[in-house]
Image 1 (spheres, rainbow, N blue to C red):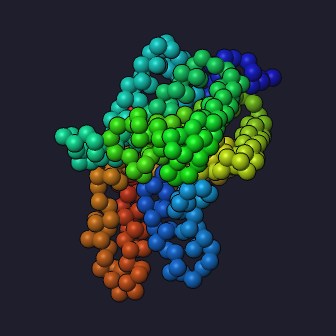
Image 2: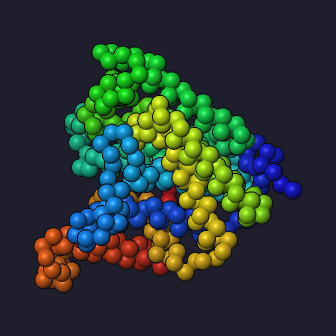
Image 3: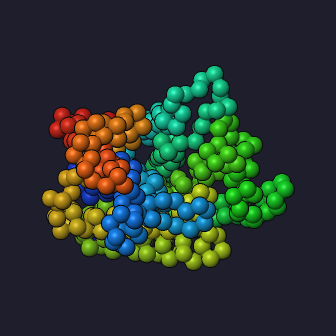
Length: 379
């Protein structure tokens, strides 16, 4: 009988080497909201007369400060999925004869490339001669840093010790925000203007800050955010075990429910706040990610209901490509050129809806062509 406590690198070294369709599908589901699906749904608000569609549309906008909507879950889920994939890729590297040092270098270079791409993404055209206007915080940079730290922890600590790392980081972050005084505001101020995150960004993060007084992808929030990727490595280890599928699902669901419960209880004192990446927010979204992964795994890889996954798989296999393509290719303009004549007779408020739907279709066709040609951009 295999257990989850045996090895320092991963719980159990499985003989399975193939990709799990559930991971690619979940990644594609997540990226759908970034690659145009979210915009399409938001534009449907107040147009159909259906309250449930209006509710979904409202879930795809971030709260002004404290609070939670489904859209807050999109980036944390991606960080978590990046962690789920790490045990598969790292153990594949070890099995191929790579040393830990080789893997460190590989992930370190990947981190630097993602940071550079992130700066390009957030600043293009980059104001090279005005460095004060360059935003350093980015989604891609955060992913790169989180994966690098998660790799260091994965290759040197058991899953139990990695959990202790997560607990320590979340508790230290909580203590810092409540105990360290901010000049002019004091300690424990979690307001937009007076929080410690903003003070550190204003004083130690060069360049442009997205929110002017702070940057939600800045310095201090990196520490709680990377915990999601570390939690993902634990989920990846569960999937790699040779335990029965029902036990894998039970572990994932159990971790999900416990994490969500702890996050909701903690939020009574430390509010759920995506802008601050509060510890309660990390536990809530981490728990949701465990739960989503369990559901996708049991439906797709255990029950083998797979025909519906192709649409999402095409997106999930080229997530980096579509993230950057959406920044540099105007799919909406092309959609308007190709399809405006079809929806022109409809009422004016619907034009943007169908333009967004057309852009989403173009994105998918673009990714499908890459998929058929077996072109997958990875770093």
